[in-house]
Image (cartoon, rainbow, N blue to C red; front, top):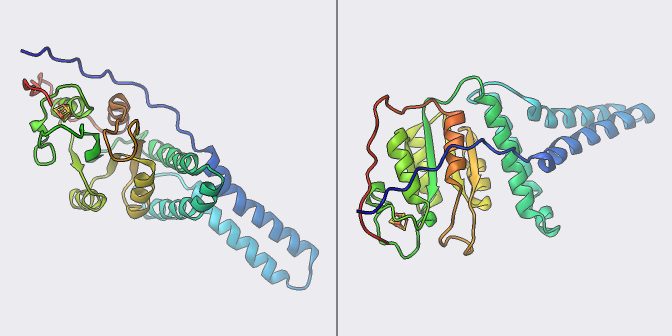
Length: 262
Ligand code: SF4
């Protein structure tokens, strides 16, 4: 009988890095507002237009300061606008060879807002979304249809994830298409999504589902895109323990482990 591996210990959620995005998101409209109000003070002709421009710039930056309930419509608007900013400056970031840093900075900003929103009231109905590429490419276990088809051989993160799902009674989906993940999320109607994916898909997901607060964890790509990818299971565990009401039953749960190899 194969020896059971210990489940990964819960960690502390890492610091989120969103400074780059926030400097652009707030800095540009604030600078534009200052410029417009200065223009209004110096140019009496067309002062109304200068003032209008200044007010518009302030209106653009205002949602980035909103705080409070993650499900409030104003937060959806703020998330939608943040995504638009991230998408709008992506070509420039790519040109500067900062595309990955730019998207991850936006993700960090988003995560910080999600953590603020759920620090006093944890999510009751959370859904985990994972990409199929975390499964070892040569593994034949049919985890897309049944997570428990995994043999927990330890060659990819799926085994650890399965054991945590069974122990903690998490709700999760592993999908091989982004649109399926969005459909699963909309059908389940979670109050929080915890999503793992590459930076490109994380940005796409945050843009497509602004109505659902989403804590995102980026994939490691040691073998390139979409093949044998990796992610930090302790990071996922820390996110779930920090942001989500525990559903773990008081009694011990026997996790399912099978003999076999991929
Ligand atoms: S059997 Fe092994 S390689 Fe296959 S999904 Fe499970 S842990 Fe990954």
